[in-house]
Image 1 (cartoon, rainbow, N blue to C red):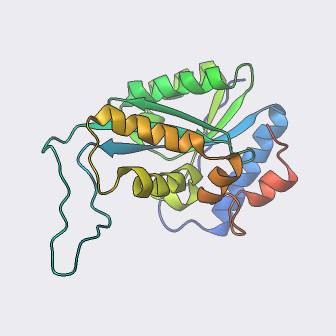
Image 2 (tube, rainbow, N blue to C red):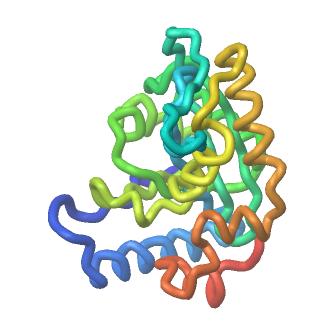
Image 3 (cartoon, rainbow, N blue to C red):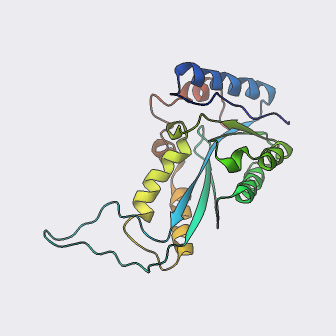
Length: 218
């Protein structure tokens, strides 16, 4: 079940040929491991210090947001199955290589005895040799997206409404309560809601043909 990471070339705009090439590689891996589960993963930082995205106040008055003055933060890791909408979420104190490796183990437990094909960006914690060796041992095959192309990562799209609904314009009593609220929000979405918010149901979603015509629900 061990395989090298799937890669596409660096630099420049993502062409249709690049995306088609990546889809072809995903198909080859799917043929090699018919029971493989396709997941898309990403992480985001939750800060105790609130983001001021929008505030309401009477005309002529400055809106006020009570804060503690402290800026503790946590990393929220998430993976979504773009075929079924199932999500796996985990929080860590940091976003380092060891934390990513812990998330890989969490994914392995969530999908026991199934090969996993994990689509993700090229963050250093993802490309580190220790991370890739652990992924190979766990039967998780890393499909690396082009650099700086978050529009191809549907889990990244799911963080946006999370930040708007849960994180913006308020400060929780503790950063752990902020994390707990974020986890509950993501996991409380129905599969259909999660797919819609992640952009997986959009007509132009780059994996749509693969999912509809090649990948059975897993």
